[in-house]
Length: 490
Image (cartoon, rainbow, N blue to C red; front, side, top):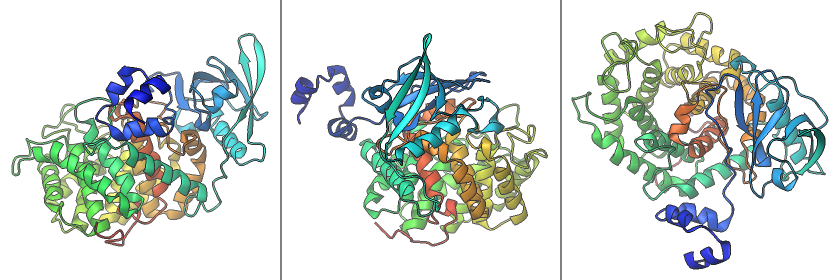
């Protein structure tokens, strides 16, 4: 269909078409099927409510502190919710005839309450003969019964996440979608301008790589080429004051190393070395790190940078990189001081070790130690803290994404049995993220997730769920893989 016929027969606004020019992948999605529903979210900075996707219903719910009712905040056009008569403003009182427990904004309550009940009810309805989900809702002054016809889908099998057909279909749908919507530049559309696309594209590329599909290696290489041109090209050897942000260099190095380990292709090793050398040059004398060379926050720094740098170094070492042991050891001093006595996980910094949002820092460092085969007692202690505080997995330095990506990986590399158990607890989350197209809608934390808004909810949401599901496979080294050249050269 050409643009003229699309305009005439589909009545697509000309502004929309102009906005899509130059992005053929995005146009293909529009022409061949509706875009997956994207929830209408308010960043999680409010102390008393939380917005979240409602799975295959194609709607957005809002929960308030202490309440049992889900307020329907948005309904997607043509979706299950709209087709079944659910309306914006409805307050869902019961789900499948059951009334949930009150919702709490406490991070330690995880998905307990209406979210857990709705996620489980969706899975049950999708796998039932009737394919019906019944909700009781208050609409104005009246109570109404809403019966929603949901798409067919089996339950997550008892083998989840290892050999579960539903998990594999979900994962495949996400990866296929990420490939389809990659921009011509090799990146994915970020939430804002600037350099958000570099960090986010590293995770999207990693998600596609984790599929193990050789035909998708051009997608991964295109992402790498984009990162090389926009970010790594800024690096000036021997001058750590010049170059991209440290968290960009870390994520880039992680993708580059995993690519080389998967394919045996050493083409990008010089770029990997540049990123790792830059990070080593930015470790201060007292072991602290910041966004760039300077250490922010009155010199206390950001341990989230340190742990990602260690993961980059550990993976690069598997590729033949000579790690700067002085930089590694200096950084380890700060990391050890940042382990909270209450949580057992890595906090915000040595000044705030018992910061509650531990999964991203703790998970990344656990994986780094596992890959490097160093300090097994520390690695085990960190992994245990992730299991004990698994309900906090979405809460990570204003970014739900890296909490779930690194947190799940940290558990997997140390305790695969505990990983299976934790993943099963997160089935309601995965179900609420799942769209009718088997892609993932973004589901943020109960706290601030402005970092993910910066990256772009849609791409980072899909990458997050894909890497959660991929954590079951021993392919990527961050997920416990040990076999080199497992994918083969492109």
